[in-house]
Length: 248
Ligand code: IPE
Ligand code: IPE
Ligand code: MG
Image 1: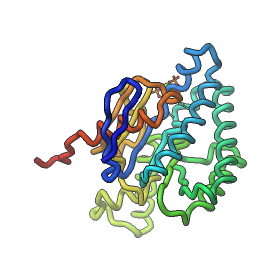
Image 2 (image 1 turned 45 degrees about the vertical axis):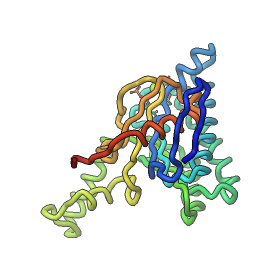
Image 3 (image 1 turned 90 degrees about the vertical axis):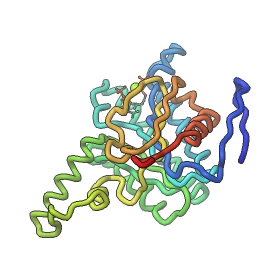
């Protein structure tokens, strides 16, 4: 049992021996963070990307098994081309740096989402990151890129239907575990805790299937301001919950 005292002097107690196995974060609030400072939205995305690096490193340091972050949704293409371009540019910068530090960090990286609309250069960087890190053990970070929960479910349904047509699957036998294997998240346990900063109380198409029994934690703090202390507060809140999974 370890204790942590955040700024407002309210002691937060985190049991590091019983961390959630998988934390998922909707990294929201970059635009508002920038606006508050009179900066362009892109500056908020840069601060958000930097914070992702800090939080992912911290998750690895405390021994978390899985971290999944929502970086770009299937709906985010609706944003101005300039903003989308800036986000993709930050992604490239991040991946190049991550590849450079890979042997030191040894974090396994995966991508959830349809990467095909990305530029060939970005796709290649994602593939390289995945390839280099696939044998690492310990923390796995999943970056959701052009990810949408509904899109993921449709793709799974299509792939499954095709397997039935090809005689490789029988609809009468389909179970939850088998269906999960058609999702981007195949092999990854469901998130125990889903965190959404920025004050919005919605999922915005994130991990619809996987978060069926997740605990949710919402905070008004904007993503670039979401510190390690905020993460510990979320974990402490999670540890105070009673998960029943429909039982008693
Ligand atoms: C999240 O921050 C980043 C992405 C969706 C890519 P936002 O850009 O949505 O920030 P707000 O919600 O406008 O503050
Ligand atoms: C969700 O945030 C997607 C990511 C954080 C990547 P949005 O800002 O896109 O969600 P809405 O539009 O507020 O629902
Ligand atoms: Mg937003």
